[in-house]
Each structure stands twice: as structure tokens, then as C-alpha cells.
Image 1: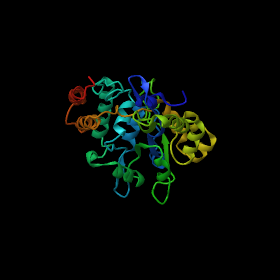
Image 2: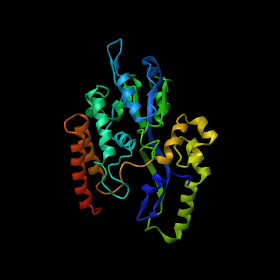
Image 3: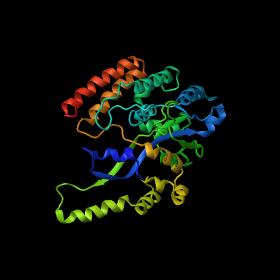
Image 4: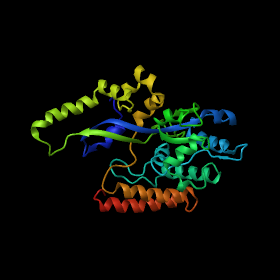
Length: 307
């Protein structure tokens, strides 16, 4: 119970736990506190407020530079965004949900932001490195990214907005009460191989138990990794060292992964991204784009034997 059920679920197969997670990187919302104050924009508490704030904070600086609200680096943050509505691309048990109303609603609001000029027009060309650079230069007001970046963003040697970057969970949609603090996470786990030597399996199990223990989890956190135990995030020692601890404590109980791991996962992610971009850029209606994604993803899951 001290470990996020969403993270445990990643490593289950046919109802049994095959590995134990021990560290993760979770996405949150980074925002430029100084920019919000200058523009008189309130920090959003719902995704609907996030959309309103994004429109209000987009502006041209006195030096002529364009400041955008947010962009998406084509990796995890689109998944975190649809999760804010309770949407998924593919569920852990391989149900295709990419064209469900929750996901379509997320795509519709992202398209609205793009049309309002709050997202850069060259969004599809911006990778994660470009996105981080825009944010640290003060040209993005917000960024959906791993929580531990807050340390870099508040380092004057690496960021021109230091010390004004703060983190909160990405706000959920008003009616998404089941997932108040959405986050997509990358997770590392320890397991025991089926073909390992029988005489070593007890030692291997001790190793797994060690990595999962409260003591090891806290030490791992103090060494700069994010522990998967909720109790470790609440530890005073960890909180004193990790400025993102409060946000992580909120998102960890709800953190999950993008899609289940299987041989066609990369293809599924590419298919989703293509249609998501088409929806956001206005090349297709959001429902049509997600219906097309669902059809293509279903074909991959059937080919791989999951449907």
C-alpha cells in the first residue's frame, strides 16, 4: 500500500507481480513564478484554469521576443495531459481508449490553445532539449516535464529564470475527481529471471526486498533518485533535500505509465503522436484524428496477440 498501485500495475502480468519498482521519474507542471506575477495570472488549479492561464500569459515582451504559454515535446507530456481528463491511449489490460470522450476533450482543448497562439507554431519541431531551453530562457511560461528538473531550472548557472521556477502537479479537469493529480512516469524495477540459477533465487529475492525497503528507498531518495514509497516522500530529510517532494507526494498515488510494455509499443506511440499532432494543428477534427488512431492501434494490438 505504500507504493503507487499504478506503478505496481506496470509490472503485473496475468494478475501476478513480476517485478518491484524502485525508482521513477514523474511529470509535473513547472511554471515561472515571476512571469505569472508580472502578467497578473493566477496559478491554475484545474485544467480549465490552465487553458485560461495559458491564453492570458502568452504575450510579446518589450524586447520583441514572443513568450508562449506551453509546448509539448512529443514524448510523455501529451500522455500526462490526456490523463488529466482521465483519458488513456491504451489501458494496462490493452483496451484501446484513445478515441474515448476524455482523450478527445483533451485534444480539443490543446487545439484551442494552439489556435490561440499559446503553443508555438513549430510545435512539431520542438524536442525535449529545445523545450527546456525555451523554458530556461523565459520564452515559455510553463512546461510539463520531470519534477527533478526544478533543481536545474533554479540554478543560475544553467537557467536565466532562476530562482523563479516552481512545481505543482498538472491540474486535472474539474470533473476528473478520480485522478486529482495526474502524472505519467518512467519507472525502473527489479525482478528475478525465470532462467536464473535456482541456488541464487533466495539471494535475488533478498536483493529485491532490500531495494523495496523503507530504509533503502529513503537512502535512494537522498542520493538524488525518486523513491517509489509514499512514506519516503513524506520524510523530513528527503523533503529538505528535494524541492519537488511536495508535488511528488501528491502525484505518486496516481502515477502510471504511457502504455503497457509490449513488442508493438513504439509503433503505437508513433501512431498516437501522428494523429495527436493532426488534431492539435487543425489538420483533422479531434474526434476523427482519435478514431483514426484507434483503428491503427487496434490493428497493432491484434497483430501482437493482445486483442
